[in-house]
Length: 237
Ligand SMILES: [Zn+2]
Image (cartoon, rainbow, N blue to C red):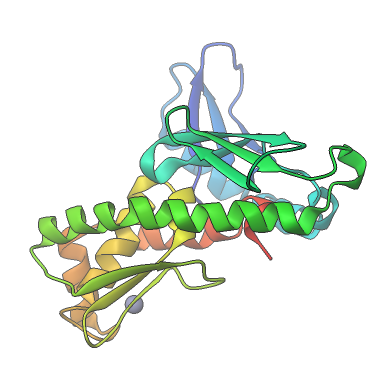
């Protein structure tokens, strides 16, 4: 089994198995209808070096795409897709319409060529943090109840590298960027932090405890590492 995380697509039109890497850095394997799924793992295993080289190259090229603003923000964690519109004038810099899942950003100067990148990505990050504060606590509550553990409080921050933390006092801190990850990976992070309520370390006993609730934790950890490097550009400072 390869440790590269990919999406599998079965295509009636495809004649051969192939791998593509999307601009979002998502790896997709396309298999012709009827080909056994094990072929996908095999192909990814064979092409591992090429995949890694390509991802490195794409990451190095990221600065070129820095001025691109998203038209949509995908939040796989909660299965939502947010439309982003850029307007010349409005009451506040960011207007959030939850009824139609639309985010309206004021970019002051409507001339696309002189739109200032820093403020817009900052506005998007600010909104993400506010929205994550609204949505992440419920996800945590649900997982904690599955695991039958109690935490004291939860806070949501927008951190660079940490996905979450758990204090000695039982306070859980979560990264707002979790909303951008697929639900199974978010669940792993939540299980991980909640498991620290029982084991304040990363001992064998800790991982055993994690495995009770997330038997695939190794795979999730790999996915998390890969996806961390493939987040939309506006997320980074
Ligand atoms: Zn930990």
